[in-house]
Image 1 (cartoon, rainbow, N blue to C red):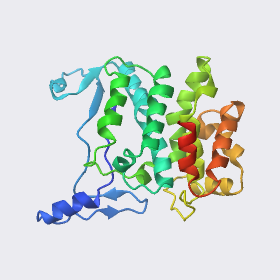
Image 2: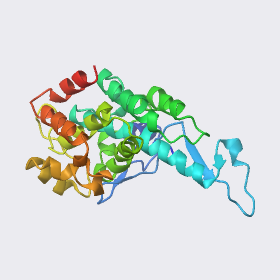
Image 3: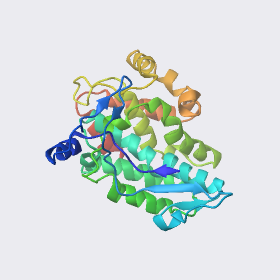
Image 4: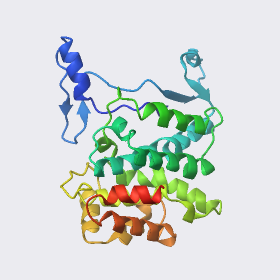
Amino acid sequence: MIDKITPRPHPMVEKSLSEAGIEGMAPIVTDKKTFIAAFVNAEKPQYLVVEDKFPNGRPPLEKAGVYFCDRDTVNMCEKMKVTTCLNPLHTAMSMYGCLLGYTLICEEMKDADIVKLVKRLGYVEGLPVVVDPKILSPKAFIDEVVNERLPNPFMPDDPRRIATDTSQKVGIRFGETIKSYIREGRDLGSLVAIPLALAGWLRYLNGTFDDGTPLEVSPDPLKDELMAKVKEGKIREILSNPTIFGLDLTTTPLADRIEGYYARLLEGPGSARKLLQKELA
């Protein structure tokens, strides 16, 4: 399991390197809209969790901060990160960040409403069903994400990058928690941040900012199909797709809540802000 947020090469870093006299820093944008550059801007925190299975021996990399453990623990660390402690928070804040016109994650973390969304999603809705690998504390992991990693102004990450390929991510980032609630007999009606995140994604697929002006939706293999369904009002067709969410959400009470939130997000300019403030009060 590797965890180190590595945004696209940012113009701020490119400019500082060019001003220092280093040439060839301009990134190349591929046909698939991926960015390649001679530099990497990334955060200081990093996690590398490796199965300790080296028949011919290995260097003592634990002295450099590598975590060695059995394969099951590696898998648990991965599940902890991608289903609860980091990736769901990233996606939820990116949907609303895009709608509200943010272009930097660190600036979003100055927005009280978005911070409330992130904290509720991680601490209140995620931690009760988190997979605990024991070698990492899930709560401490979220603490670091919320208090240090996401607000870091020297890691210029863009919510539009994180919004890429969202249809391929929501099943892991939200569907797994929903399935855990069902499996453990927990009340799905207690979930607020997860349906807010999914409603925000559907609203994002409308292709307009919260003020109604045009918004360019990030690349996604299902982009054209999903945007067409959203514009035709076929929301339940999306919510019933187990390939996207890992389960048919229309068999749960969450579908009605997501649809309700989505309808409120279409009420006009300022709807996203109003919805967040009302539901997270």
